Image (tube, rainbow, N blue to C red; front, side):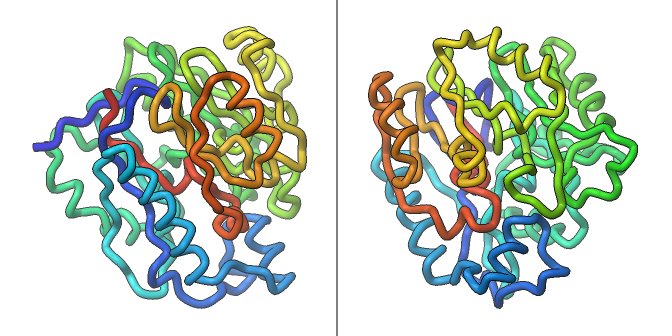
Length: 304
């Protein structure tokens, strides 16, 4: 049996599910898209091609291979988007929690049964139906679990609102020894520059004490300030609106000092290297067109 272990976002990675772009299918219709950035690219005729996305994901798989990380891939379902494995489940401590995702995406979870079958069934948790949650909103950080949410009365009007307060409460009950800290995110169905689809679209901890942050992703300024105080201003790389739109906060840590990042993130990658991180650069700009990047397409199972 596989023994899951995730305490935070940056301890040395041993095992991960990496999404798959094969069989991604034709360009979706506007009405079938889940986020404003995809809609923008569908309308502009710049939606990513399957062959380009396969290349980009293979480059990430090569980096994992270099660091001896065990990589699982979903089984291919034809004409189905299976890139963003972070959305379908997530691990906290030794428990895998199934995400309650958009109903259209249920088959994505079925496509990782070959991995789930290696995990003790008592360590797989399915939350009650009313708990909406996706892995991009959930960040274990040692004694804390940071969760992005949206609690506005118009929650149901936003296809971009993916995690509700019912899920926050349920996760707090599952992990009573952790401090679960929720952050209200800015949502827009139409403007990708004003939409934090998930918490990892505007925030991510890196190293042992640093973070990438985008102020405008947070609806409540005091919650943003809490993070600034928690990490310390000198330890924060603040990204601007354009960098948020390009998903600069959605890098992925292999360890406390090794980060996979997009090669076009020049300002961020320079800062990371100046702060003693090893940066493994990959091209991921086609996948970014679907409002997801490196963290979104990886679901860690085991870290040290």
